[in-house]
Image (cartoon, rainbow, N blue to C red):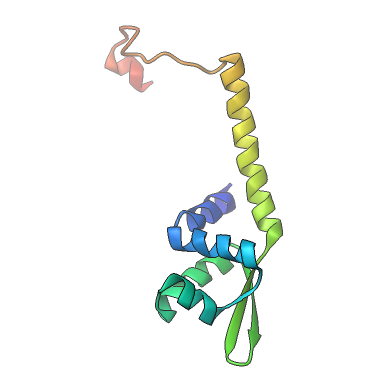
Amino acid sequence: MHEDHESLRVLGDPVRLGIVALLAESGERCACELLSEFSITQPTLSHHMKALREADLVSTRKEGTWIHYALIPGELDRLAGVLSAYASRARQRETSREGVRSCPAETGDSKREALR
């Protein structure tokens, strides 16, 4: 669960999500291409790519002085499965209405009861 949380947190940044979307569309990209595409500085790109690498979302390949980045599809598939499982559970609850709780304030329960 912690790894899922960390990977999803990393994807919560708009620039990182944009990088993932671009890599998904176009495949491997050189750092220089990412810099021009996102109008960010090299240190900022390095920061974002480090986060994506540590979350096992991208791989790197060095060619001369440039680093090329590519998505690791297996991790994205795994995260998609996690989110799909959550969505499935939510649909099941919505359909069966199980787990629907009334608010203690609506039932006249005291604040003390609401905190239990």
